[in-house]
Image 1 (cartoon, helix red, strand yellow):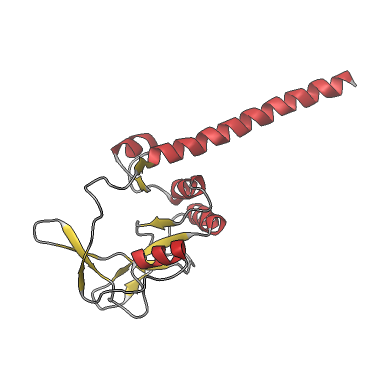
Image 2 (image 1 turned 135 degrees about the vertical axis):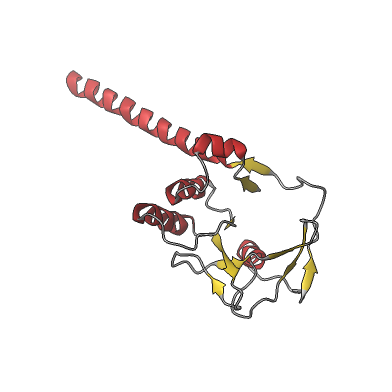
Length: 182
């Protein structure tokens, strides 16, 4: 499933880029047994509280892969968090603006983002990784993957918090009544 940061999400949650507290709430809304690949560059430090929230969400979920990117000198820019699971997501876009290919062999030290996600999901790396420019085999027509607006995940999280708060208020009322009856 793809959680899309779409126009509806931007109108509901706010303009891009979202702070990391908002991103951490999205991570928390995803079931813990899922593998989460975040293809959004988180390369620089942010507000301390936001970075703390993000670090905690990454640790709580556990099955998260962050994206790195290759620099022109062959080195890699890795996420700002002390987080070991990351991989590069560089793709090759043709002159017509369409992405049809990628490379899996940019570095012996840094794996491709898709390979790290695959490894975490299946518990093993793909058996054969091509070298050089590799055509992406899109399985199925456009929109073949289930895509859900990030707005939905964000709203579900807020609804759950509202229900918990409502239940706590109701419990407090019940306890007050019970103590008066004693």
